[in-house]
Image (cartoon, rainbow, N blue to C red; front, top):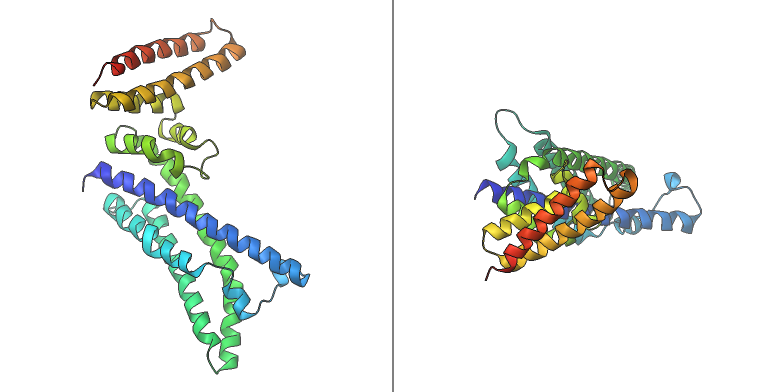
Length: 267
């Protein structure tokens, strides 16, 4: 598999797993709060019955996360970043996989212990799990934060990969939803630090045009032009219409319009 294909799979699996984990984490937090309110105690003092503790997670979703996106993320990360010196991204992604695996194994063991006739052994394990569930979840959340931070640092190196830029454009609205407040446009600010969304839409539009995809290129140019108009209005208000920044953005808009008109002529 080509490197740019691997890079897109890495991005897709990271952001999907990131979102899935945070859905599980949100579910866990809501259920913990509900139990704390039910029993009228601080969550730190909450002591749940075994079936209540097991209800904090969607067991099937946790297993699907570990065996699906996280497994793929770890494998692709190894292929891209393992060498003489492993990249921190690979270390973090591997640790996330292992921590979620341990979380799932703890749940399995708790279910088995609940059916055991050894009450003391179950009580010991139950206390351990009850303590480590929130601690391990916070650790995974922090690992995801570190992994995302590292990924965003290396994103600019992917800004010229055809598969990455086209796939991000085609599937990014859904993929980056609930990760970035402004979705794809905010992702472009990480991918193109000096150009942001304007550069992002322009680069992918040029790529589509070079590939002969007229309709896709036209649409992307239109989105780039819309960003240029918005940015021009903002800069003109802050610095004046005759400022160098305003003139530069207006020049980019005119160039984009010419390239869009050319894309319109493609079959």
